[in-house]
Image (cartoon, rainbow, N blue to C red; front, side):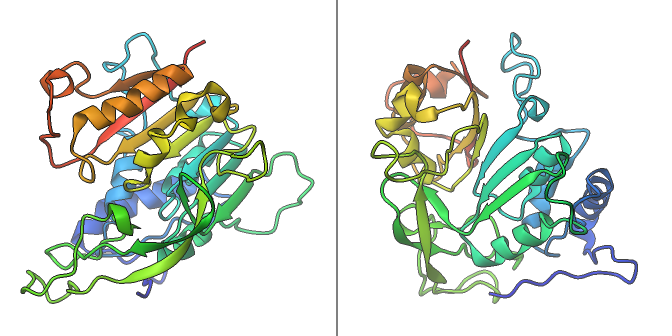
Length: 315
C-alpha cells in the first residue's frame, strides 16, 4: 500500500472536489501551528473525514465535550488545561496537532499502520531544527505500534477494505480479532476493493503499566489527557481489571474514547466498561446516556456509528 500526497506548485495540497473543505481546514490549521510542517493528507481518502471531524471551527472537534451532555462541566475537556497528552491510534496526527495548537507541551502518539505512521511522522515534524534546550519546544514522541491490553507482543493488523466508491479507507484498520472485514469470494462494488484483505504483523504495547513497573505501558506518569480510538482494542483495555483501579490511571484526569459498537453491539458489555471507569473514579458523559438503548435490558446497539465517551476524574 503506497502513500500518495499531492501538492500544487505553491505547496498546497491537490484535492478532489470531496477534499476541498479539508484542504482549506488543513491550510488554516497549518498557519496556526507554523512550527510544524504543513498538514498533509491523501486525496480521495478518508483522511478528509478526520480533518473535517477535528478541525472544523464551526462544528468543533468531535473530541470536545458538548455542553448539553454535561452542563455542569463547561469546557471540561479543553486541551488548553493539559500539558501532556496521549494520542492512541493517532492516524495521520490531526488530533496530536490539535493538542499542540492548544498549547500542550508534550504529545505521545501511537499508530500501528505503516502508511498512516509515515504521514504522522511528516505531520508532526518541526519546520526547522529547534534548540533542544528551548523551554518553548514541545516534546513529541511517536511510536509505530498498536496499544492493547496484556503483554507486549506482535499481533496481526488487518487493513480496511476501500469504500464502495473506491475511496481509500485509511482509518478502519484493526487487529484481526476486531476487524469488521472478511475475505470475500463474491464480486465487490468497486474494482479498487481487494477481495483478500491485506494483513501484517505489528508491535503491540500494553495501555497500562503492569507488573509493578516491570513492563512499561503507553500510559506513563505525567499524562493527564488520553484520546483512545483504537478500533476495538479499547474493549479489552476498558473491560480489564486494571481499568477499574484508580492507581492504574496514574496522573490521567480526562479520557475521551470511541467505543466500537460496530465490533461489539451488546450494550451490557459497554456498561461493564462504564462501571469499571466509575469504580476508578471517573464521571462519564455520552450522547444518549439514559435513553432507551442505554437502559433497556438486552439491547443491541441500533445505530451504524460508534459512540464517543467523555470521562473526567471526580475531584
